[in-house]
Length: 226
Image 1: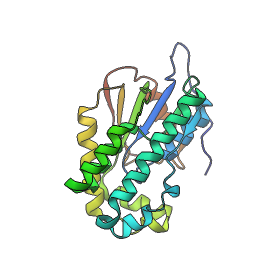
Image 2: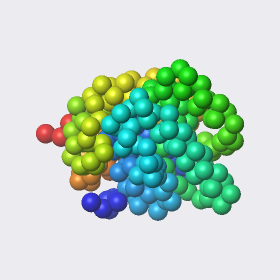
Image 3: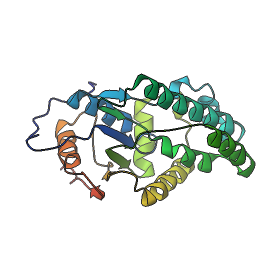
């Protein structure tokens, strides 16, 4: 797989978003899309570093025992990424990221019990997270069976035990989060029929729709390929 396709885009008169955040549940394709966009527009790319979390594999095996440590690691990691970028003034050039720091609390609310959530919230409140506002957020959606199939296909060993129940709860949490999200222009994409790994036409159509999203909330439901 390459990190992008060779697109023919008509950019005449179009104002490109300087900061794009791609979001969605595990397996939906957000990192693939972020890498493609970075290549297409020659943007810097900021990716979640899940492989660096030493608790993640244990979380997938025993969520209840490892949820708090997993979530705190991610919170501190993301806060450090944002702080490092601020110090380097990297938010002046253009960029694309495969996460929103705002959604960190979404995972905490899904995975932690009340006492753990209280501890997490105290840590969160002590951190100074001055994240910039994206010019565009792309939220990728897909049903649980699609997410499960994509997780299986990509073959990451630690992810193979992820349950449909967890994916369903996560999907619901994302939908609730973005139902109320209004901090930036939002493009909600039905990604169930999108092949962003191999199909350049799918990707080009999504990019063309993305470039039309400059304000408000919009939906993109691509026509299934026959």
